[in-house]
Amino acid sequence: MKLATLIISVAAVALLGGCATSGNEHLKNQTSSTIHESIFEGVTTKDLIRASMGEATTVTFTDGGNEVWTYRYDRSVPQLHSFIPYVNLVSQVADVKSKELVVMFDKNNVVSKYVMREVSSVKKIGLAY
Image (tube, rainbow, N blue to C red; front, top):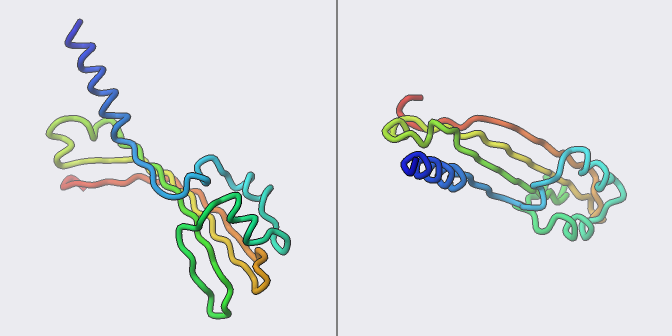
């Protein structure tokens, strides 16, 4: 009984400890629908975006001089077999959910275009792949 409790406890700690997030936490609970309800092309300003989303992950410029802000959020959760001793030396797999919001501003600092993408993928690492 003690051994089973120990194994379950170690597995739970390893599973929870293996999760990783990166990027802008403001995107964590956002979806395409919630973004479409809060950003309006030709209306929403740069200051409003900054107030609701924080600082952008990256800032770039188009050839025409328009500013483009990109927000990114990733969450990676290892699959269970990644915790099996010896197997994890040659094979690790994680489910990854990524969100990216790209906002382009015109010369008046108003949103001219934006897109929200959500992608689920599987990341495979190791000699077995």
